[in-house]
Length: 361
Image (tube, rainbow, N blue to C red):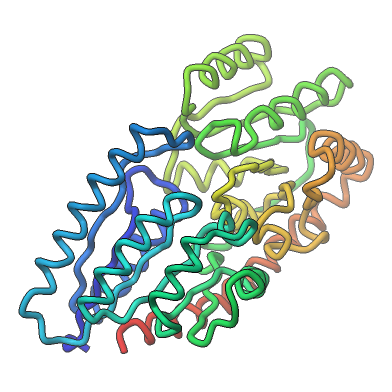
C-alpha cells in the first residue's frame, strides 16, 4: 500500500470542532496504511465570517496550494487527495484546491460535512463538479444527505456513506431515576448552536417549579455570550454547573451525569453533530432541532427531534414535563438511545472500512 500517496487537506484541531476532529481520525487511519501528507487549512474558530476571516483564509489557501505543489513534485506514486469542501462563499477555496489537484493528476475525494450547499444551491459546488467532470469520489454522512445533494447537483457515480457514529464508544450506564432532572449542553457556546434556547428551557422550567439542574460545557465565542453565561450562573448558582472546555474522560463523565442533552442548533454549516452521538453513547435522551442529518440520527424512541418550523423551547418543555410525570419512561428512552447508537456504530464501522480501502486503492 505504500505505493500510494495520499494528501489529507482540511481543518484539523485546534480548534476541536466535530469536522476537524473526524478529519484528524481519518488522517490517522490512513497514515498507517499509505504514505500520507497532512495539509492543515485551519485558520481558527469563526462563527462570524467577515473580511478579516476571508483574508486569513485566502492567505492560508495560497500557502496550502504551494505546499500541495511541493509535495507532489517528482512524486511518481498514485496520488489521492482527501478534502472536506467548505460551505457558502468558502466553496471558492475548495474550487481553487480542486483546480490545482486536477492539474497535478490527483484522484479527488470530497467528504461532505455541511448542509449549507445542500439546503441552498451553490454555483461554486456546481462549478466544482463541472471541473472534475464526474471523476471525483463523494463521501456523505447519511442517505438523506446523498439524496438531497443529487437533487441539487445531479447523480453521483462514485459515492460512499460514512456515518459519524463510528467515532463514539457506547457504554452501559447504571441508571436509577432521581430528582432533579439533569439537563446538559456541550458546544462552542454561541447563538448558532442554541445557547439562548438552552437557557430559556432551563429558566422556564425553574419558573414552573420543576426541579431541574443545568450543566453547560464549552467556551463562549463572544463577550456577549460570556456575559449572559455569568448572569445565568449568578442567578441560579445552586442549579447551574459550568465546565468550560472538556475532553476525553471528563467529557464522558459529563454525558454520564445527564438525563437529557439539549442541542437546538441553528448553525448553517451543521451536518451530523458528533455531540448527539456522543450523548447517545452514554445513554442521554437527546432533544435537538431537526436540521441537516439530525432527523436520521435517532428515532422518537430515543429522544425528541423538534421540527425546524416548531418552537424548540415550547416543544422541549412539554416533552420534559411529560418525562417527569412518567419517570419510568426515562429509562426506556435511555435504553433505546444506547441500542440505536450500538446498531448505527456497527454499520458505520463497515462503511468506514469501505471508504478507507477505496482511499488507499
